[in-house]
Length: 286
Image 1: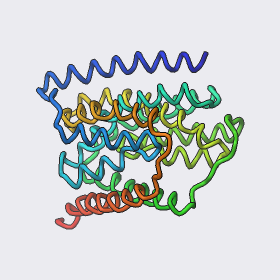
Image 2: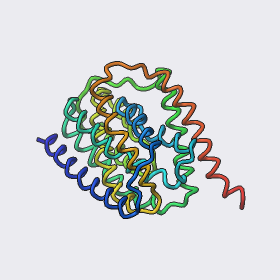
Image 3: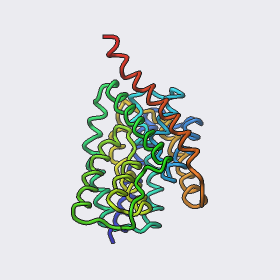
């Protein structure tokens, strides 16, 4: 029953979010996506579906190509990857077994965190956004490296949590939801936290994808109407991402991700350095 309600609510939210996105893009004459953003959405969401995450890789490419101003990154990420993540959530919530109470609690906590975080991000100085996202990319690259070195928690066999572990999971996802609005991906920290609490890593997929699928359209409603966003890139990410989510979820049965992660480490580290250097420039000029 809980899963049915969640999926129905997600469908309604996705339709409302899509309507707001299209109307706003039409009004701003930004409805036509760029080919580069379509390709970027396809690649990043393909690997996002496999658990790598899309925020760090997208940010890295945006910085390398200078597609948008740094202050536009959080809004563009949350809005552009929202609909592909909804597709992921629909697939994994139905295919992977996990306690519905844990699933709903983590989703609700992440959404509340995003509601708290979004108004803060749209008002922050550009330098602060650059610094926060730069530090987040350093953390992300470290997590990729640790994963390749076999230092990440392997998790347990549990499909549910109760008592203290459940409370920790809920509080953790509230914090992660708030950080998502800064352009800091939720997948890796969610996987680490829930694995440390003893949850089966496979069971984490519907939780982390469900949390993002709900919170991204919710906070995205505010980002769409803000000035710090490029809707042409946003629409390209969505159009390129949704089909590749389906390809990754249903057609890819086995894929070695070790080499890819090492490549991501290098690219993400480079983007982190660029962001942090940009964040420090105003300080150096004073």
